[in-house]
Image (tube, rainbow over all chains, first blue to last red):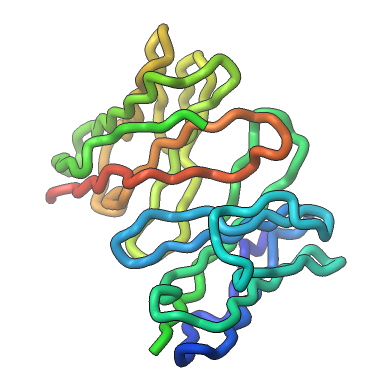
Length: 115
Length: 112
């Protein structure tokens, strides 16, 4: 069974540009989560998509946005990049509605560097 | 979700049991304890979770105190590949609260 995949592995942008990160969930998973891990900081929740809808959002400005496609893959867009957006962006997927059990499977991440 | 407190770092000799503590004194009745780990620059990996009973799987054991205010993750025979940051997370199972709130975790170093 293929795990969560993310692309690209690395992305270098300059301040003010836009970045697009992609995630493919595990087959059968309908939920996709995005997390940011900046250097020296912990993992911070960004966004949760399920069945094509944004279900929850972390404490990030509106220039962080995304979407989920009918095949459940997802895209994270970061507009007007700032230096502090440099981080490892992790995507996770899970089943939903499984009661207490909500194991999130994480991808390898996309390392975004803003110059 | 309740907050958790973990020691910032721990060492353990290879082959010994690694016992990682977590304090979650404000945990409420419907909140579960989850453990994840993150090996350097990789995505976090689920280890185990529990509500109030002790749990064991092929990776680890989870011991939750009777008052549920603290727990211990046990890696029975630590190997060098267990060197990672271990996160203790508390969350409820209500729909709409699917996010994981990671703290700073414990950096476990397995020493040869």
